[in-house]
Amino acid sequence: MNFTAKDVQMLRERTGVGMMDCKKALAASDGDTEKAIQFLREKGIAAAAKKSGRIAAEGTVSAFCGEDVGAMVEVNSETDFVAKNPTFQEFALNVATVVAKENPADVEQLLACRYDDKMTVQQALQDRILVIGENLTIRRFVRFEGKCVSYIHGAGRIGVLVKLAAEGADEEAVRRCGKEVAMQVAALNAAYLDKSVVPASALEEEKEVLMAQIKNDPKMANKPDAIIAKMVEGRIGKYYENNCLMQQAFAREPEITVGAFVERTSKEAGGRITILDYARFERGEGLQKREDNLAAEIAKMTQQK
Image (tube, rainbow, N blue to C red; front, side, top):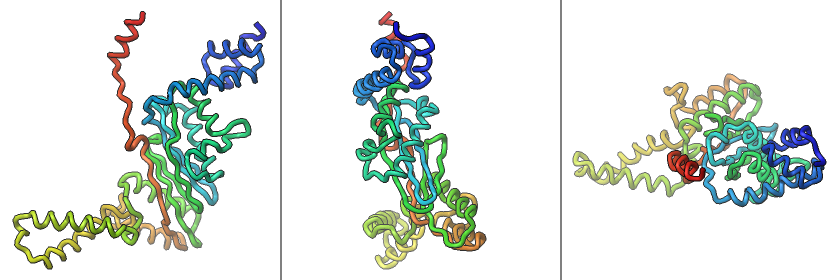
């Protein structure tokens, strides 16, 4: 044996891999730590291939905001337990930082970006799969250039990235305004920034639904079409309040809208703050969840003994 227990411990600390795997790696590498790390990475690639078919719908949303750029990513794991792992959380934040700095076009390009001076994001992902022991995937990301504020809710369950413009406003006020707006988006998930950007097709569809609702109401059925059309137009305002961020009631002060809150904060900050864009990720949304059957797993383990 060309290595000691201390060498095994050192390799374990550097990689996070179990003791037995570290021993095997050092034995296969004649005690050379760097070769052992490479051995484990190669083993990790194989492990990643075996795990790639397993459902990863848990995970975390993480965000990074620099002076003039912001990025947010969703990284998925198989279990919520792993999602809380500090190693996993650190990896997700580092990936968000890579997105901000490298500006990849899509996830495929992101995986090819440098994670650090030793490996690409793809290699780092494979390393994390080896260390953590679950299938991990980088699902999506968003990147905004300009002043950004992020908000992460529920230990990464929901993430919001807000892009703002600020003219002459106090920096702290801008940050607080962005944070409040991000929290609003996290809670109420507005579909559009402002009523002015709602697509005409979405409005027409909503009008058709409202028209049908009114005509199907026995009390309204005999109303003239012109009256019904006016009623529909009146109810569109409620649609804006429910679906457009600037027209929503501000959660902290329901008597004013989000737009009015931003306007008020701008005046108090001695400048002008404008909300330009935002993105909201909720981990695992739209993905099939992993279903664990604990009783079946225990029975299977018992049969194997």
